[in-house]
Image 1: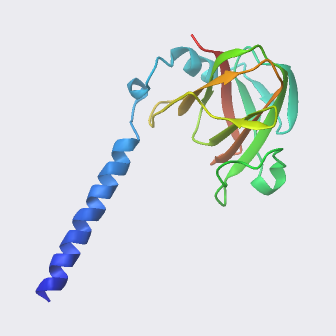
Image 2: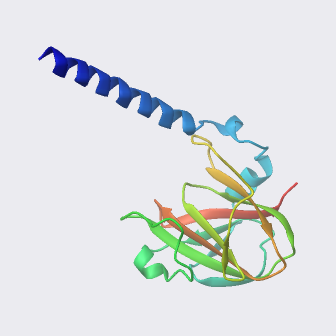
Length: 171
């Protein structure tokens, strides 16, 4: 009995430690992003965001944020399988962009979701990532080095059936 109590106490401490470590990985508040987000946050919350349906194609990178409509992953018909499988009950979608100027861009999302940026048939890896909870209007922001080629921006694992996205040149 005494041995069992020590094991239970150890397991409880281990569980608390793991929960604390997970909470520490998710910073909270707008001041917890790794770089200034005011421009991205303003774009993501602007009332005049263009509303796009999943699968739509844009001629060029949008000059302001967009709101992308999302559907069930089975209906999204993402051109490239997402690098992270979406959970049940989440939403997905994509938009194509025909022309881009080469450079470093910041892609920011209003809510938590997985992003795949695909250019020339390859999923690009972000060169930097930052995210925080409890910041109205923005949840995560990533920096990507884009080439002057068409791209597809895929979103999956979103909790809502829409998400605001800002793709802005990095400052």
